[in-house]
Length: 129
View 1 (cartoon, rainbow, N blue to C red):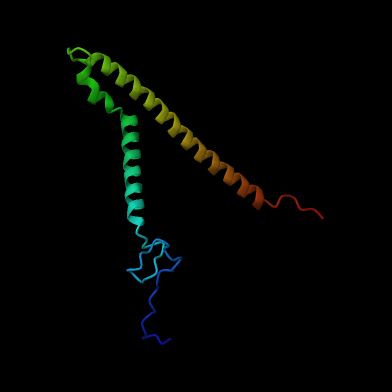
View 2: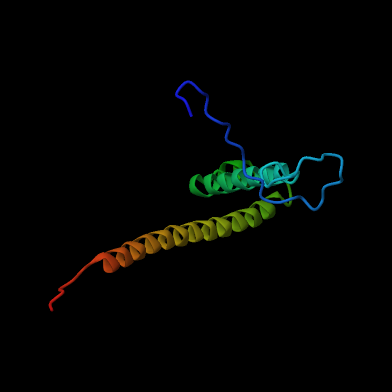
């Protein structure tokens, strides 16, 4: 290859044929241009947004501000609904926070264990003949 020649194009690997292909498009389907990828993308975005909203709601307890007008209401039945919703959200907050803490502690445990294994495997120790 001469210095003035352009580099060859890099193509994506063709991993497998799509068994659900209806035959209209004769190009082989890969994992990158599968028709299901749009659904998976939207599912990941929805899950990420839901996780973000639940975490922010739990950490800042924004539900208390939304339910505060119900606590001062004089209409019949509203106070009971407020107490029920407060109990539900308090329980959810407790579970989300405890699960989040378990998640963080599990990652710290795995990180520290991994470092311990790496140090143990790479330590030479005393090698006397």
